[in-house]
Image 1 (cartoon, rainbow, N blue to C red):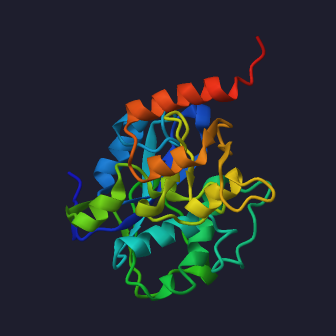
Image 2 (image 1 turned 135 degrees about the vertical axis):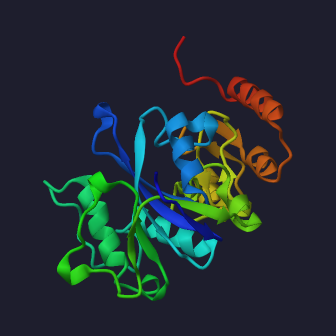
Length: 266
């Protein structure tokens, strides 16, 4: 019988490994307040709360999880830096993935570097391996600080705080990275595309740049940089403010396509 270690106010950043032969070698980094629930969501797919990047590519196994962060924001910043090591200003020393280096090994190399620099090297973190088959030793010159234990075996979240649950959104916080500038977006400041089939996430200012024409100071109309659909800026802002439900948005898109014309030839 597996021995579970209950942890109160759990904030964790995990590493998944894809076991599907078709996508073998792929990894995914995410944030969670409940690792046991989260891996189930990833394997069930996006409709059940899993991230779109892992949907329909399972099964996935949760290889390891870093926990002990003082709050959700601290964990989310760690997640973002692990996902974007070459953008994070704290990880300039991390070299790019080597030609023959496996993606999995590259992310472990990034993790080893992250645990050496501030502010993470001062946090009371725990490195926990959840799958014995994927355990790797840290390089001798990049071992975690002495106050960070390396543990093995499952862990459960004993108590989930309301603030963490609110930020969780039933998806990975990877979905709160700006499409344009790759920076973190607070949930209350996320601007999305009007199309229900487009998963674009942007800062307001970043989105406005796509809608601004030369010589304009206020956006009027423009094109979504991801799905290439055209909308009025006022409609995008109204959705951001919660003025549209799903039905209203769909009607608006259909009317917009008629107004702007289709890109497809007859």
